Amino acid sequence: MAEENGGAETERKRYAFYPGCVSKGACKELKTSTEIVAKHLGIELDELTEAACCGAGVTDDVNEEMTDALNARTLAMAEQRDLTLLTQCSTCQGVLNKLNKEVQADDEKRDRLNEILEETGYQYDGTVEVKHLLWTLVDEEEYGISKLKEQVKRPLTGLRIAPFYGCYILRPSDLLGFDHPHRPTSLDELIEALGGETVDYKGKTKCCGFPIQMMRPTNSFRMAGTHLNEAKTKGADAMATPCPLCHLNLDARQPDAERVLQQDGKLAGSIDLPTLHVSQLVALALGYSPKELGMDTHIVSTKAVEAKI
Image 1: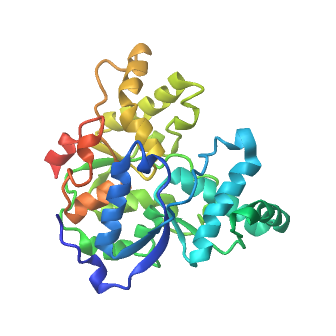
Image 2 (image 1 turned 60 degrees about the vertical axis):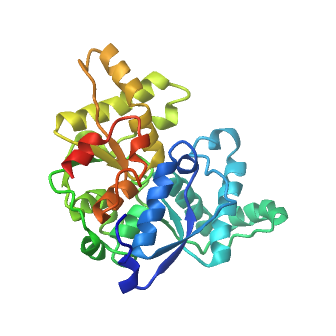
Image 3 (image 1 turned 45 degrees about the vertical axis):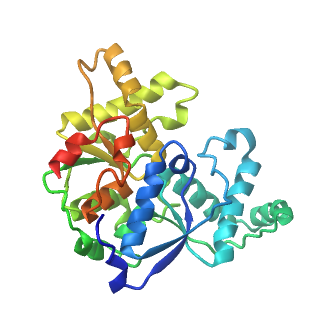
């Protein structure tokens, strides 16, 4: 295990931590990796263990007010602690950030949600900021890319990484604070800071297909497979994403994506492209072993990545 000394030289930052559902269920290794990175860098995570699922933008179609109330409750938990809300999921970031901006701009909506929250013992006044782990690592006013570079013990030299932003961490840009200079290119900057080489390709800012997986599985797998195959064709050794839902579709569902592309006549063999969450990528560069990061639980083998570093 790498020595944990990142926090010794800097003031500790404390956040209300919202890990989301996937990293506590299907992909537990992603939460573990985030906790490893945070501890190493001296970032304190106060997990919101009673928070509900954000709905992933899907439950809005069933009951929008219920979804808003559940997410307002999560924001209220962070506000009660007087902490910034930290996510490790792009989808959670997008959903929570959207509601947060709406509540801050619409007193009537805030009052209505607080009426619903009253019986739960929570109230939300709209004072919380929602930030993704990726932004926290890159933004100099939080941890910062310059400090992170100093902590790298195992540079990802020679590793060609395709950044996959996905949807929710990029759109809509006005709600996600894209007046900030680093956020539109944060994943590329992070990869380069860790010593890796970024692979540019058209699909890196497109949807992975997860939101339509239950309704249109073939289309969902086709979308994921198209992005994976394009990145692999461009020479990528691995793909990195800030979203556990994207990770799930790009890794766990990669065999399904291969099957669909083969049926379409667009793939002769296999894709075989490992997908890592941002936290795993950072932890590797900090010196932690693939086993500590649960990379042996991935559906697509990460042995090629391990051999490169």
